[in-house]
Length: 86
Image (cartoon, rainbow, N blue to C red; front, top):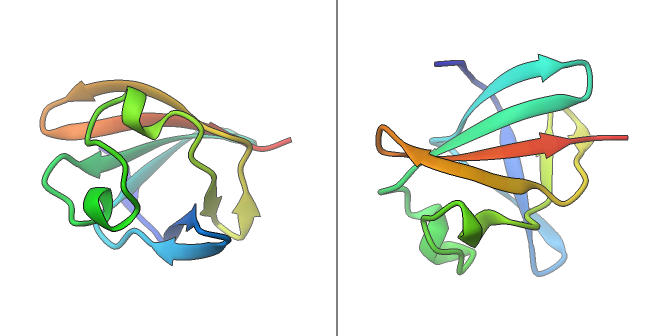
């Protein structure tokens, strides 16, 4: 299901760690981010644990800031989000 890595999400102009997120690199500039539906980060950054709730999120993955992400699905207890960098 991907590896654990340091990943952060932008909230109120600062990046906050998402300790229980998992990422899977799709290509050199694209990742799938998986956040457990039960993660406390949803409440902390005021995003619903749904695909739509994570539309537009900006992440810091492997020291790379992403463009606004696209919520993809809720599957197997995880919110799946597609994140890209330019």
